[in-house]
Image (tube, rainbow over all chains, first blue to last red; front, side, top):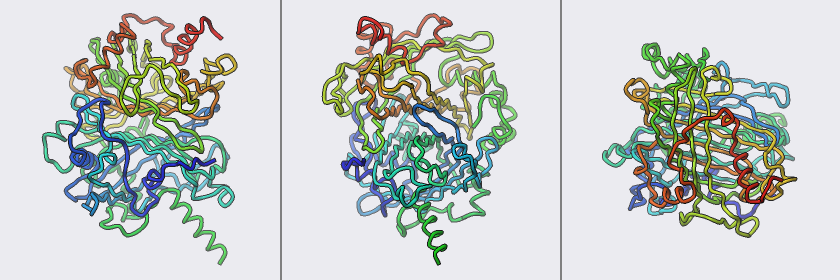
Length: 296
Length: 292
């Protein structure tokens, strides 16, 4: 049953809106660290940590592993994940626009090679892998709203920005219409981010972009291409991230694959031109297009 | 990504990110014992000196089909020492924590359970959690993954646990949430390659992130209500207690556990089998005047 009090802003933040509004975390309080007097100043620090406020494109890379986990049964390491994001920060009427796109590869956990099919151990057959290509991924970040500024934790020289995103909402793909791909009629996930930078660098320099690393955990429904049907359990993705100085610094496996598959992924959008995409919305569009083609 | 014994893929990653010449020079990238020492230097201090890690967690519910809640925070101090032994290290580790109201930051002694709509007594954490890290266990029970990019070195420890619960619901209907104890826990550590490669540095600056997804905490008295807890935890190694940001934290810890800021002095072989839920069971049994 869906809890109707489900946070609508969270749903927007989940990148299904046209330009989702970011309103995450809370104003800094006494949870360990310096209070910034001005929320807009704190927001600028966050943007300098996660991007580049000069308007130049910034690049981040993340890598990690993906697990199946079912309480009462246990968990297993399924495959690894290698992804990157490009983004450009521009001023908007209300604050900032983060114009971005994300692309990634699900890779074999032993060889590191991109998977084209994956042997699903639960259903004991091969499924076609659909790699991540979210184009675009755009968020509007409002200024003048302390509640919209990600929480900042500071200890010694560590500055850590925190984002916790929880989404529970009706699924795009229902079990009746997409029995192979939809785990449930409720789409649910939690996505948890930490971004780490040097407090000294943030406060003592005016650099529009500072060095940063981070950690991101997501727990949610199975990926639709896994064809898990309504099997009970959660998919857990755990990656660590780093802001890179340029596209050429990304791992070769990402460059080689995406240069051939879609070289446009290396350029952040310059304007809001299309609705945001997620793995689920892109997959649904793909299935719907296939079905429409078959009917012709 | 790798276990402590590098695979062909790990080596390819290292060459990709670290540069082939640099990789060849870096002992900790290839030698398992050196890699374990690098991890100890990251998590702790190879000199044997007592040191502290400070963590702060936001604690959430995660219930299928329902929206989730930020129910409380947990502020935790680890007092640790690492001792070199033949074939590895002993980690002497004490962790002590208080819980805070997520809005006011006030220290909680009771917590208003919004599902039960009644107050429950908070059990503050205060336990030893000593472990042996043996080179021989690396890639098996001691699974430490590593990757390198420029000066950034990243270690990960991942735990996926599903085992018989210490607190069985039949015997502990309020505190036992399932017949199995289920845990997915991931620790990410970020440190500097230059610090790891400097033989004069025994404790590399480090910070990181942990996400723990598990059954309800026993003291929440959720019984077998469906759902999970998520702890979203950030941590940093600190130079001393003066780095701690909340002035009421250490006094609150010491009032509850006088040894909270002291690493344990000794290691017993049975320490290696201790569990967090086992510790809760002891506390609950003591409060109830006996097990079951």
